[in-house]
Amino acid sequence: MSHAMVVEGARCQSGSAGSSCQPMPLAFLRSGDTAKVVRVRGKGEVHHHLENLGFVEGAAVSVVSEQAGNFIVQVKGANVALDRSVASKIIVA
Image (tube, rainbow, N blue to C red; front, side):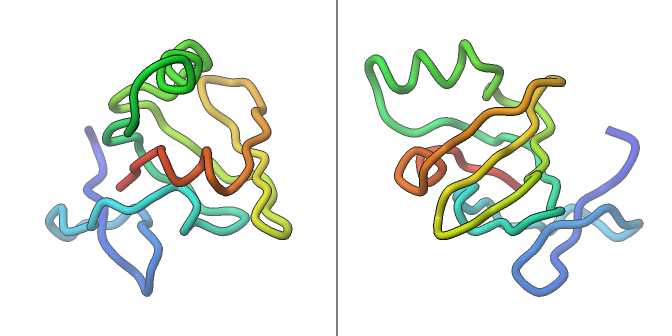
């Protein structure tokens, strides 16, 4: 990884300091934020479906828009709509 991640408020942004970004649910991010997937919580069909959509360890995720707890995020070149409960299962840093 060429850029380390640092915490700025509750958000992770590229910077030159050491890696100190704390893992948090994707649901904590806001429109315009970018992070990397650390892991996907849960088991079964939802977990498998999220992995098939591209939410795998190390994948970059950008929040395109967020309204009332519903998200449109970009992962691996595709836009994906998620509700807050599903976004909470995806841990990013």
